[in-house]
Amino acid sequence: MMNRILHVDGDSFFASCEIALDKKLEGRAVWVGGGRRGDGIVIAANRAAKKFGVKTCMPCFEAKRLCPSGVLCRPHYDAYREISAQMFHVLEQYSPTLVPISIDEGFLDFTTMDRHVFRNTSPEKYVKEICERISREVKIPVSAGLASSSRLAKLATDAAKPGFIEIKPGEEKEFLKDRSVRELSGIGKNRQRSLAALGALTFGHVAKMPSPLLKQKFGIWGQQLWLFSNGLWNEPLLLEVKDRTTISSNTTLPYDEPDYEAALTFALSEATRLIGQLRREQMQAREMSLTIRFEDFTEVGDNHRFREPQFLNSVFNSMLEEIFCGIMNGQTKMVRQIRIAFWNLARLDTQPTLWGRTNAERWGALDDATQKMNAAFSRPEKPALMTGAQLALRQIDDAHKNPKAKCPFVPQREMVKKLWGTDADPLAHKGDWEKRLAKVSKQLQFRH
Image 1 (cartoon, rainbow, N blue to C red):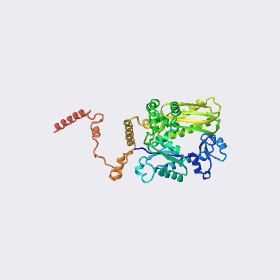
Image 2 (image 1 turned 90 degrees about the vertical axis):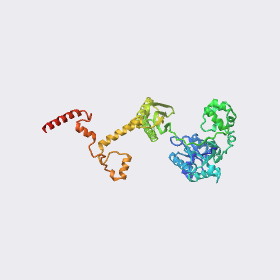
Image 3 (image 1 turned 135 degrees about the vertical axis):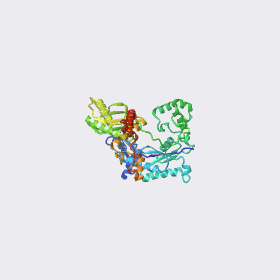
Image 4 (image 1 turned 45 degrees about the vertical axis):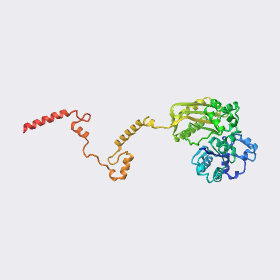
């Protein structure tokens, strides 16, 4: 079966969100500025601004020079997250599988739509309905591309903006032949240079190359690239939930900070926030780093590797303070930016620390603790701890709330103890008692 994957992407998402938040910005050139005061570099610009030459990563003062009538907006990230959630809430109603890949884009699986949905409509009408609904309800424009794989669908979306393009089965090679390999998502500069050295600048060039040559040069990735370039790459959409491998924070302070104690306080606070996020995700880190950027953009930093993965604030904060004091010793420049990172992450499991390292040890420790608590706090009519079955049984039948002893007699072991005087070896003094009984018996016989 030929896979059909839809890619949906928000157009100039941050700038579109600002327009959605403020209707007065409609029809105007808008860009969103980053940096400490929101006037650093352009992090998003709408199409009206791009017509004047405004580009991402351009200084905001340069954008204002190119487009004097344009509007600079400071970012509102919390609002962007809310709008993103609304967009994905709409998308999840149109496919059994939705795979978000960023705040403003994701993939939908349309593989089985021919049998269930497209009998009464066409893919183009169906996708346009999705885009129009997002525009109507969420107030942001989106573009989309439909193809046989997620990689090709993303290229289709880039070619479609603004709008929608479907690459039908059999048209993949023709669509790709004149497109640059630089457009492929995830391809690095080193691979681009290596392909260029072989004379492969477009997917059409790659398609004409021998597959064994690409395999020899790039391994399995080279074979996949050859199949993709020839329109033969047909991959299913899989939703994989993977644990993160790193977590970091890169914060530019509102003003250059001359007080190192204040900078350390901020670093400790930010580290605590990151550690809290790790705890919520049930993760722990084995390595950490701290980097300080000064007012002149020079940097100092260091990292530390723990013997075992850690999750306690006290451990991380102590090491962070030690690293900070080490790298800031002798420094005199003001602090501009603080970067903290935790990596080499592992799943957080506090059980070995509390109860043991194997299931047998854990269950044994739990059973021992249960016995001690029952011995210390239980009453005949109310045990301190009960199993779920015991509790349910008492709730079902009142007779079980005060259960009677299974045997009304003294347990055998206690009877032996009282009789023979010991429970270490109940038969240890049996011979002495038998001799005494025999002696008493003879005395009784002589009396009679």
